[in-house]
Structures are given as structure tokens and as C-alpha cells.
Amino acid sequence: MKNIAILGATGSIGCSTLEVVRNNPDRLSVRALTGGKNWQLLAKQALECHPDLVVIADKSAYGDLKNALSGSQIRVEAGDEAIVAAVEVQPLDAVVAAIVGSAGLSPVMAAIDKGLQICLANKETLVVGGSLVMQAVKRAGVDLLPVDSEHSAIFQCLQSAQTNPLHKIIITASGGPFRQFSSGQLAAVTPEQALKHPNWDMGGKITIDSSTLMNKGLEVIEAHWLFNAAYDNIEVVVHPQSIIHSLVEFSDGSVIAQLGWPDMKLPIQYALSWPTRWSPPLPPLDLAKVASMTFEPPDTTRFPCLAYAYEAGRAGGIMPCVLNAANEIAVAAFLRRQIGFMSIPAIIRKTMDSFSNKQVTTVGQLLEVDAQARETATSLLSAEVA
Ligand SMILES: NC(=O)c1ccc[n+]([C@@H]2O[C@H](COP(=O)([O-])OP(=O)(O)OC[C@H]3O[C@@H](n4cnc5c(N)ncnc54)[C@H](OP(=O)(O)O)[C@@H]3O)[C@@H](O)[C@H]2O)c1
Image 1 (tube, rainbow, N blue to C red):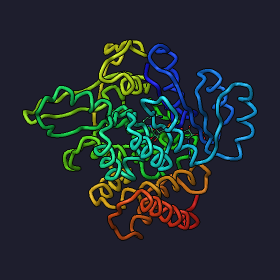
Image 2: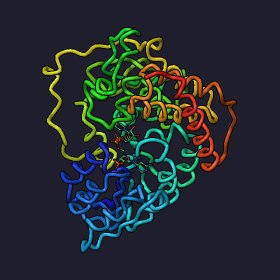
Image 3: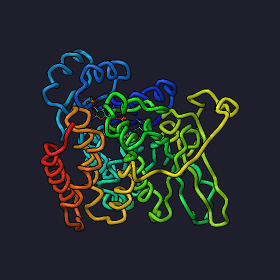
């Protein structure tokens, strides 16, 4: 029995993780659940799987959550510090890191320091703190297992590598709903249109990131840290059907790919079951039904966020943290209809340009940069038009 904590249980990945738990009741036991604001769903999940602890980040929701769980013997806590402390619940073997954004960094660092296995969905953790996270992983000797479908694919492909070095990583991208839009059409895109992803059912922020190709940019930085790959050896190819989740090329030119339906239950389950494989969480892949698979290069003129992410990743230091913070602010403003779709890359560009790069050595310093970059990006919002 593997004892797990699900951080971000009320989100899309959190809910899919609970489906994996439901399918594997004799293998997985939930000891802690955390949510951001959605106390109703968190209470429902807790009453179903009886963890020892539930934590809600929003302190104003504590009373409602506590009432909903009265008489259940489940400990209830609230606030950011309690989210970080959730990884101290015992017994615990693994943490599913599914909080969205840089808010996920501190809980992941705490889980690494506790020596827990990390099933990482929260890519922003590696974008913001890649160097410090990887140092901590090495120090603690923990397994950092990718949940992101592309990185799960690369991780699985690399298992055929033996001692051979990888030559190139090829990350697939669906291209999002606006793949064929002109620049003029992109300028008029609404949040409703952007929230309709053609293949994947995901949380709001990552769905917008997919439509700007920032998601792919964040994944390039994530792949750099997870697989110790140089940016020149990480390529992105648009594959609108999202059946090939990513590929690895070896030095003899052989290319290995991992395929599957676009559904997060499989990569979540594989992170939890690794190194073994459990019964399939989905119907088998039917290639005749898929019928055709197509590929094209990404267009960084219409979708500059991908180029900005490569630039920030190559620059290193605080730049990926600045890129991520500006993106989080711009995406939230777009969803509030405060700015237009093309203002997202504009704000990221201007925020990056207003920071001088430097190296930082602690998570505290990174969080300061994150706060400053959010302030800069916020101050730029009023100059943009909705
Ligand atoms: N969805 C996917 O298919 C997918 C695929 C690959 C990678 N990922 C990555 O996985 C992460 C989660 O994605 P998602 O789509 O599941 O997002 P989501 O549906 O928006 O869920 C985010 C979760 O984080 C919680 N949360 C938000 N802000 C928080 C804060 N400040 N402190 C503590 N908890 C907070 C939310 O709580 P409330 O809802 O209760 O407010 C929710 O539980 C992201 O980093 C994303 O890039 C997602």
C-alpha cells in the first residue's frame, strides 16, 4: 500500500488522481488532501477517501470546511503554511504535486526535504526553481517522477536507453485551438474560445497556456531540468492529434515514441505505479480509429511565448521565474477580460525586459523575485486594452 498526499486535490489533475485511487483501492491510500478555495469539493473528496488531514489554502474557507467535516475525525487546517506542512502527515510515501503555479514550489521543496517520492504535475515548480529543486532532489536522493504527459513519455522512452546518451528530446504540442488563426484573429480571441482545448480537459490556467504555446515553453524548461538536456537538444513539434506524447532520438538516429489517448489518468497512474505497471485506466489505443497523425513546426511569430520561454531558459538565473510570474499575472488578467489575448506575450516581454538577470541561491530569494515580477507585470496591465 502506497500512502499518498494530493496537493491540489480539487483541480483537474487532483480529480484525475482520485480516479486512479478509486481504481486501485488496494494499492493507494490517501493520507492528506489540499485545496485552494473550493472547500465544498475538498470536503466531498475527504468524506469519500478519509484522509488523516485536509488543508485549504484560503483561510476564510476554514470554518465551512471544518463544519462540513465535523464528526469525521479528519484534521482540518488552513493557510499557506499548513499546505507546506501537509507533507509531514504520517505515514506518507509519495506526494502528487498538482497545485497550479509557483504556489506549488514551497510544498514540493518541503516534500523533497522529507525524503518523499514526488509525482510532479506542477511544472511551474521546475520552471521557477529548477536549479534549487534538482539540487534538493540529489541531496535527498528522492525519485522525481514526471506526471506531465510529455515528460512521462520521455521518461518512458528513456528506459530503453540503457547507458546510451540521448541525442535529442522531441516534445509534441497540440498547437491549441488557435493553431490556424491569423494574427488578426488572435487579437480578438475571447476567454471562452481559449478555454476550449481541442484534445485535453484541463484547469483554466494551463488551458490558456496551451493556447498561447507558453505551456510548451514551460515544458521545454521542465524537460531541461528533468532530463539534464541542453536547450539546443530540445525540439518542439506540433502534432494536433495529441496521440504521440513525446519522442526521444538516440545517437544512432533511432527515435522512440510513447503513444496513448490524451487523458492524464495514464501518466498519473504510471508515476504512482513506477517502476511497475498496473491495469490500464483507459480503453486500449486504437490506431485505426486515430487514422492519421500529422506534424508541423511551431510558429513563434504568432505564438511568441514559446520563444520567450526558450530565451528565459537559456538565460537561466532568475529569468524563468520572471517569465512565469509575468505569465501567471497576464493569464489571470486575460481570464478577467482586463487584457486581450495578444497582451499576454506583450506583458511577458516587457516584464522580462525590465529585469537584470542574476543568480539566486535560496527559495526565499526566488519568491522575492516572483513577487517583484508579479508587481511589475501588474503595473503593466493598465496600458493594455481588453
Ligand atoms: N490538467 C492537466 O491535464 C495537466 C497536465 C499536465 C500538467 N498539469 C499541471 O498540473 C498543475 C495543476 O493543473 P490543473 O489543470 O489540475 O489546475 P487546476 O484545475 O486549476 O487545479 C489547481 C489546483 O491548485 C489549487 N490551488 C490554486 N492556487 C493555490 C494556492 N495558492 N495554494 C494552494 N493551492 C492552490 C486549486 O485549488 P482550488 O481549485 O480549490 O482553488 C486546485 O486544487 C499545473 O501546474 C499544470 O500545469 C496539468
